[in-house]
Amino acid sequence: MKKLNIIIERGIDVYAAYSDKFAGLYASGDSVEEVKKSIEKSIKLYVKYNDDKIANYLKSDYIIEYTFDLESFFNYYNGVFTKSGLEKITGINQKQIQHYASGLKKPRLIQRKKIEQALHKLGDELKSISF
Image (cartoon, rainbow, N blue to C red; front, side, top):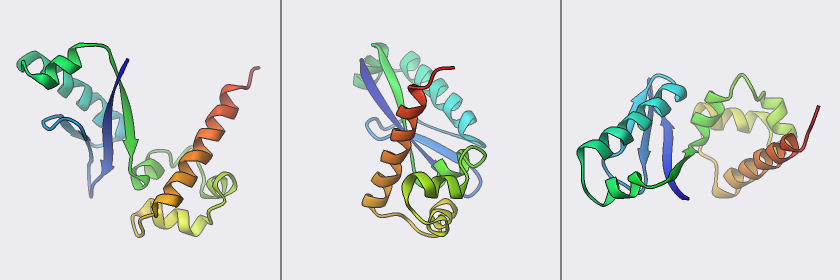
């Protein structure tokens, strides 16, 4: 199954989503949920009204994979992950995480990977739990 990567970024007063592979696929919304719905609608409209390489790619089976910038991720999951919890699983100081969440600082690639790997490890651990 093909993957369609959609990037979600937080602007001053809106979230934006776009495809890094196909120009013309973009959306915006007041929340991550809204921008996800908007990009899915944008994809359907693109396929309906276009007959080109992009539309043909999207007519076959694909899944959407969302890529967040860290500021958007931290703000979206603010009620789920505390700064202290993120510090515990990533080893990155809470103050530094706050700088990333506020957009004050941009993390280096190694820091982004460290956060991503810690979250994936947590996800794998959670998937292995049964009640």
